Length: 447
Image (cartoon, rainbow, N blue to C red; front, side, top):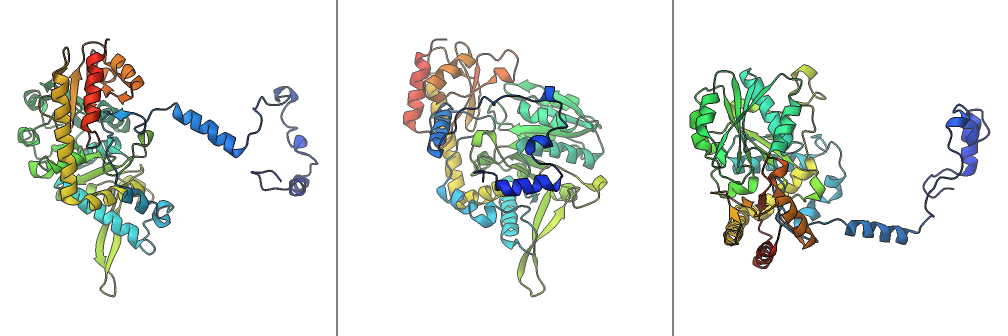
């Protein structure tokens, strides 16, 4: 019997006989001889398990990661510390292996976790209701745009040019066949230009999309932006960093109608880019238009607390034309990780993380600003800022990688002519020694 194919030669012969042939080669008779490969495949010699492990380890060593490099990468994904308890709890088999784990009759624990995750997202964002998660931050923003279109019956979306271009690409792709129009609002000193925004508002605008902190790390004035929007049908959508909300005012208290974002920084590993976690929260008037699933708390026939699935708006559950979404609308395990992370740290712990991010980021920014030829162009920021380097940002990134640092995200990939701009992010994980060594490296860079 083959090591990985659990059929004996006798069983294989029996199957061939069932279809009326005597050998495997006879099974291939329908393929012309000229099209068949003759000879032996150029495969390497068989190896033992220990040899394979050694080969894979060698390949892995060629990749850089946050285990081998000091990371200042951001732009949506951040190297935060994750308490060990998060991985331990979400690795329990009833969570880790479950597929569609929300049938109420068998999954009270999962439904309770979803309910508590939703509740914590609401508390963090200052909103009335959150769904039980979405595919990622970018698709959550796209779904928010579609929600605004359904609500207003309008087609135009205004997006600040400070919103992450990757998120914008996803939204535009999402809406490709839905007839949406996208217009982009100019920036002034790194944040949304309120005069340009005001000039673009009219009765055809369904929503205004703002990112805060924005792509360049700048802090947007959401209350001032909301005051520019006089039409009640025009919704304000905020794309936020959830860690920042432990220091910044909750968007729900500044007039924002829909809050979305990427939940990777809430207890989820970087994992080479995914799977990640989108969150979406709204004010009460929009509750019945929310995509995805919503878990609620009720009372069973014995008067005991019970958790239930309140709304399921995917096409598997309701009529297709009534569905508000057909994408993966529940990243259950990632949402559970966020739930465990927030519950473990608590309000004080989350605020401490946010404070450390901010203090360390400002320490590093001040140190970089003092290097001859370098400048920091972001005025007010949370944990991310733009550094203008004396030469090529791409070259700095390459040299830094060789020196053991992920220097940041070169903005050249997002913005034409931004060849000298480097987006640097700092989390609570960065030590003073690591930041001082990075500054020393930048001081010696010749590009």
